[in-house]
Amino acid sequence: MFKHLLAGAAALALSTAADAATYAIQAGRLIVDAAQPARGNSTVIVENGRISRIEPGFNAPAGAIVVDERTKTVLPGMTDVHVHLTQDSGLPWYAYYTQKYSNPYAATVGLSHALEMARGGFTTVRDLGGDTSTVIAVRDAVAEGRFPGPRIKVSGAPLSIVGGHADAATGLPPELAAAVNEAHLNPSVCTGVEECQKVVRQLAAAGVDVIKVMATGGVLDPGAMGLEQHFTDAELKGIVDMAHAMHLKTAAHAHGAGGILAATNAGIDSIEHGTFLDEAGARAMKAHGTYYDGTLMAFSGVQRIMGTGKLTPAMEAKASQTFAIWGKGLNLAYRTGVKIALGTDSAVAPHSQANHEVELMECQPDAVVCNAVFFEVISPNLFRPIAGANHRTPFAGHRVVLLLFFQLLQSRTQNTHRLFAVLDLRFLVLH
Image 1 (spheres, rainbow, N blue to C red):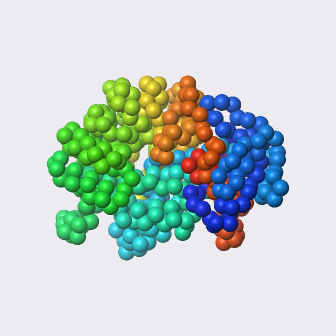
Image 2: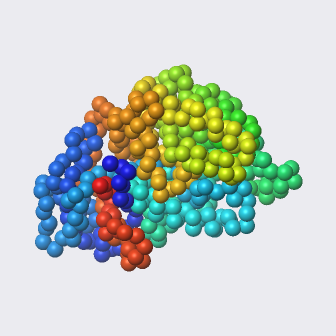
Image 3: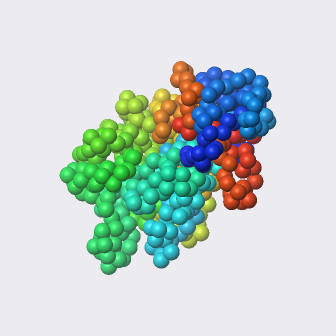
């Protein structure tokens, strides 16, 4: 069903007139409660920018604007908890060291990808890594209605050890590495508990929504420090404790089993990737209530550029390790009862293909999750499996924004008239 995803929606009010209008959204199937079967022919009535009621059958109050989706399924918009809006997919590892990729240019890239995510069905995204001021600017510009896009949460620059996955000097000649550090282009690289806690405070002061830490090595950096634990246990706990003291959630990039376990025991709120998750890590995640985000689309994105010269030999070697176990972490997490989040790691794969993550999550190699997992929104950032869930979606009174993307955008895309959303609990349309 999701392969035919038409579009999702952006979290912005298009105009005062649009908010004041009355809409009748006529749906052939309507998912109101994720734990219950879909309703048949239904009409969602939107008045003054908010859902006022849902009526059976196809109706329209006098003077209402009818949004005809009688052949479609309407359901809440999706949340992607792991994206990189200010980056492009398919580029060689050194592209961001070229003149073109300034922070102002990255902001324009972020705005274009924000729109792609909305069109793909995502009404909330969490950007987990980019220049701090740049991603905050993208977030705020969309939130203010200056540009179309989903609700955006940002982490800013992730915390990294020296030589780690988010150290911009990694893999550079010594002279260039020294210049990067002297220019203070590594603001979130830290060593020791106190230094790392200071970085958390600085990010909080800058206005981020979440703190991300590179708990282990990563695939797409030119370093050769492996995929296991990077920060010490004490550093991880210090980072998490300070973030929570600042009332911020935390996310850990973590591939290796030891790093996953260490981050979980430190109190991290979500594990990103979780590639080599083992039984001990899964049990710990369940015990701590830690979310698992498999970012399966990232693996397909890396596969596309293997052997093209766009990755260093170290990157390709690390990628090959992950391909051998792809998807198994998600199955183990699901079997263990760990809470699952949907994240894609776009821009490793194109943002425009982010909704394919749902297909990958539904049919994993072990066939444990196949046709078993569907997700419901329970917060602005995270999902949970609905099996046995009793959570009910309180649609009434939630604000609605219809994506009638102005004349400019209507001339650029087909089916634009079919796009609409619900702010907070928002709608997207499926074939």
